[in-house]
Length: 230
Image (cartoon, rainbow, N blue to C red; front, side):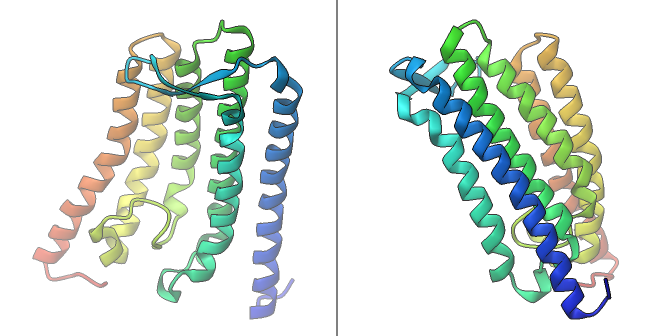
């Protein structure tokens, strides 16, 4: 395959179709399993939990399909957002990573839906702990590619300072890659060790707040040295 504009468009199309196919496969499998268990589910299902892991909101049986609906929303958004992005903030420079993050999000939603079914079907699953564990894995997977994300309006640590300067964006996301992987794995260890789930949630939040704070510090350092590039 060549390197001209036509070849680049073709490659972007291949990447998009590959990941959309994988996302669609996750959606179809999740939907099929849900249909198989649907009539055996209770009339009400847990939808939300407090920080102590206690269910504080329930929904009717059809609400089990909410994660599937969200999968479709993610797939549509990930298709449309690159089209409306300003050229300077295009996702073309990291298309593989862009679609990889969509697949991780869709897989996480499928996992949540299946955990809801399992919990509703036999009631023996510590639902909040299992969902949090899945979120920790997803967090680490996203962190693993965060350093490849280029400046854009939709994905990454989007603070005023990262969007204002390319070097701030790059340095912040290099740091975020490390903190998200470390935070996700540490939070997973906390979850598996049956320590308070609040501690795992704090670790996940810190993993993204630290890079966000660093973006301000680094921006001000460049600003003080009059070396901002934009």
